[in-house]
Image (cartoon, rainbow, N blue to C red; front, side, top):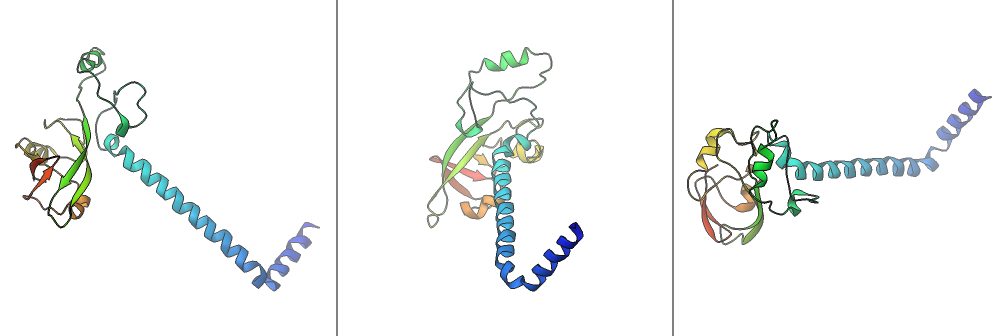
Length: 174
């Protein structure tokens, strides 16, 4: 019964392989496309979560109803006192996040960037896993900025050089 059916199916596939090859390739290619889509989705999620994954903060407080960090609104400064009233909260740190306009060399024109304002204290929470205390200390210099290495070619700047960010002259320190 069943063994005979499997043997017949195998013989048919071997004999008629030219007929089934395009369908097999199409199914295999669609599987590859699904894997590419899955990788893109994970990349998008990872890009959106970089602020949280690179920081040591355990709880993030935001404006009520905020769905995403890029669509958040400011919260009142007294929210810090409400958070510190909880005995399990050891440290509260504001996080500033705005869109910016970068102007470097004239040949590149302007570039839209995301600007993250972080605390410069050595034990700061924001980006604690990617900004060491020594680099954080360099941000105490007026007009100092740090940029992700991957974005340096896009911005056309190297460490020690200056650019214009939202109309203010800034200097790349790391």
